[in-house]
Length: 54
Image (cartoon, rainbow, N blue to C red; front, side, top):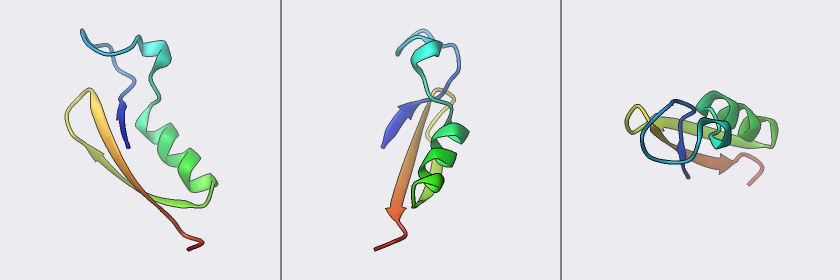
């Protein structure tokens, strides 16, 4: 998945609507996924998440 990092930027949604990468990673881990976090640039990150139950 691709998501906006929770930083101010001229493009993308407002900072209040953005999910910090560390929060997203923790949520995925708490719900049975093994996430790999990659920052594509200062404003955008990608997460590859694999369900550890399967």
